[in-house]
Image 1 (cartoon, rainbow, N blue to C red):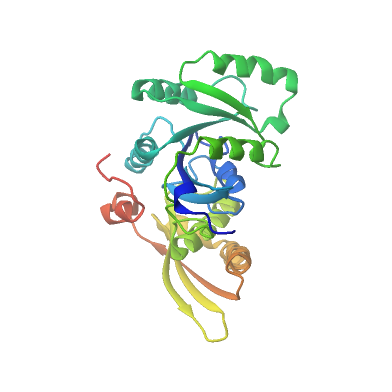
Image 2 (image 1 turned 90 degrees about the vertical axis):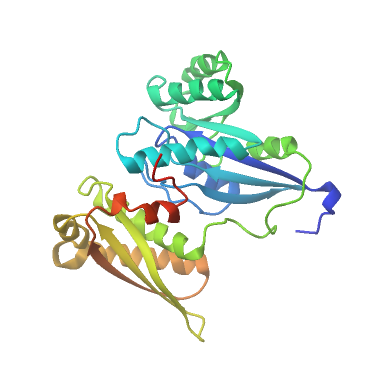
Length: 304
């Protein structure tokens, strides 16, 4: 895009909150115009805050995709929820994403609304997945949320189809306060490529394993080697907590991990616009979810 003088630049940090599986990552990807957060049908897919950067006219919009907010039980879950709430501190604008196809307003969303009121913040409520709901059913739902003092305004979108996303983006840009851009205008995310590559592989694992494997699974990029022909060799470790989980991740005759590797390699090649040679190894590391170093790597507080 053409250069915009510093005195005309505007910037807004937009915190994107919501219950698990509300479609936050899909919405952020749609607003950014590129896939910067992994998306699966699983709840709690996003583990740490991911920033996506989008340009809308003279405004730079920095979307903070957060883990779903729910009632946490485990240490990792508590750290994820704490990270989501901490996004409020730097936010100029708050988006609360709600899955309009749900039957009734869930307890997690009610808890988020209560938390916003306690923090003295209001949110733009985004009714997502409206393409899956008959329009007459959307009216009472919108009225229910409009009566809540934590809701400033309501938008109806389908992040999946893109309906309403451009209108939402323009409104956010209009609300962006004056201030210098924080990222180069062609940058899409602050997520390092090594972590992005690991997230792509983790997405494919979640998709393949369905309910067979619990959430005690993560992926690390161990090495990244660029070659003169433009290709790259990426070595990753798929980490599970127990030996039985390793067998599930590998699959009969190695078919599961082979399919995961092929799909992740294809997506990474398209994203990086260069040939990718991806190598995966499944490792057992008992208690990895209790490792404070891993929490710090993800920007999470292990003491949350």
